[in-house]
Length: 114
Image 1 (cartoon, rainbow, N blue to C red):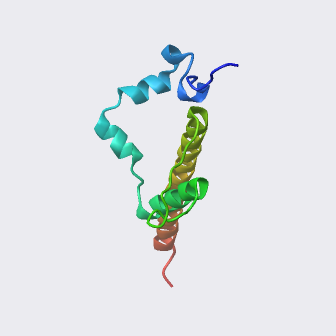
Image 2: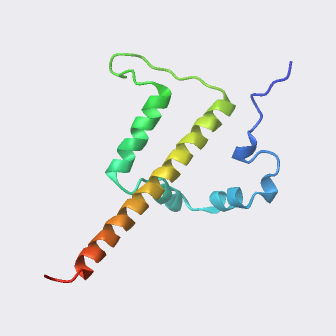
């Protein structure tokens, strides 16, 4: 039987680590830059991300239950990838909403006065 607990999934940089430019870039970032990139731009995005992760992990109140989540390294990697994709999607949606709002205000300002 093979022990796969030490394997790192390919999307986390296993195997071709030296040729993975993105992984090298992320690893070269300062802790301050990582903290800034990890922070949601708004409280609304933070709440949506929080609800998403709670939905994935389960929503038992920690005050009433002694909760312990166990998983494999591979499944944790998948959870991380899912959270990153959700964050990327929400960031793009937030940017689009801001862009549409600014376009709406510009078109309102540019309309001829009656």
